Length: 116
Image 1 (cartoon, rainbow, N blue to C red):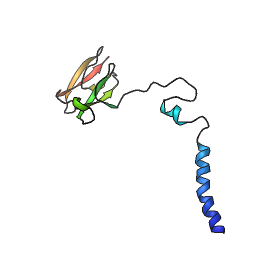
Image 2: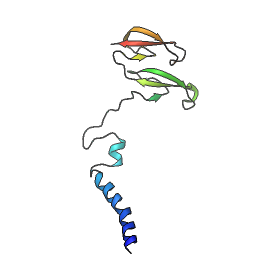
Image 3: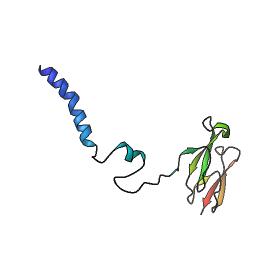
Image 4: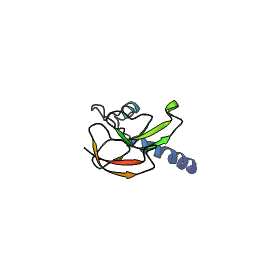
């Protein structure tokens, strides 16, 4: 009898502790939409994510062949332009002050160090 009680207790206590650790306002919807408590939506950066195209306001620092982009075939690792970033392309409104060879930019053999 004591063994059964201890076994049940061992299963119930972690569940109770785990449930107590979750804030009352946390729910799947608020986390999925990037909401924090009752604040306005959080603007999520695409920096460091992979994309089949490069949206305006971003550059990229790595390209790879991918089957997930359909006929486009390439995925780009997006980067938010900042001073000193080595990038494969120069976004509008930016310049560069140095170049260096790389094999990560596909057909472009150079990185550009961005200056804004």
